[in-house]
Length: 105
Image (tube, rainbow, N blue to C red; front, side, top):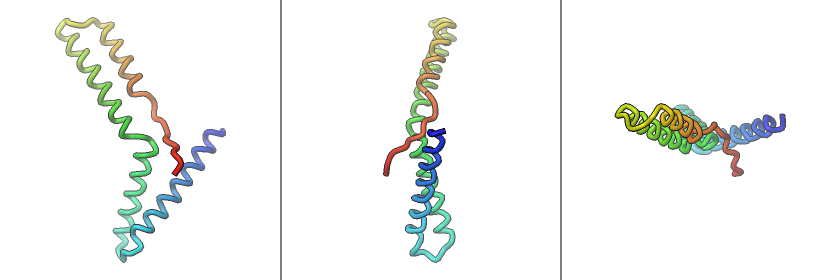
C-alpha cells in the first residue's frame, strides 16, 4: 500500500510539472495547437524518463542479439538445445522488469 501511495504521489507531482511546463511553453502563443503539442511533448518526455524506456530498449536489443546468435549457432549444429535455453534465460534476465524511475527534481 505504501508503494502505491508513493507512486501516486510521484505521478501527481509529475502531472503538475507537466501541466506547468506546457503552460509556460505555450503562454506566448495564441494557437491551441501549440498548447496541445507542448502538453503532448511534456507527457512523452515524462513517460520516457519515468519508465527509463531508453535503457529498457537497449536491454531488449542486447537480449535479442544474444538469443539470435545462439539460435544461428544451433541451426549450424554449433550449439545444443540447452545452449538455446540458457540464452533465452539470460535474455530474460537482461531484459528485466519495468521499473519506475523516481528521481527527485
